[in-house]
Length: 76
Image 1 (cartoon, rainbow, N blue to C red):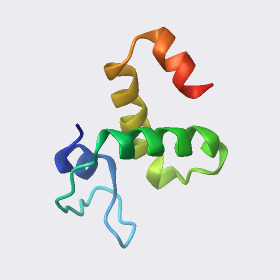
Image 2: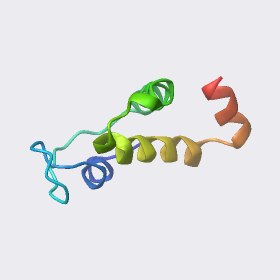
Image 3: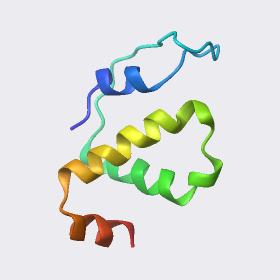
């Protein structure tokens, strides 16, 4: 399961200033991580630069929790 510290490192502050971090406590369930992974994959060409780190983090969690064949099946 992903925790808030993973998310905090991926994002920028709400005002968009690079390098500043906005933190909050929220633990994503496995289902939420999977839903976000599929969402980011489906709309990857529309992901704003500010969310690329979060997208990469979510995808990394998917790859870390599954075999390559499971990942291929998951995204198909």
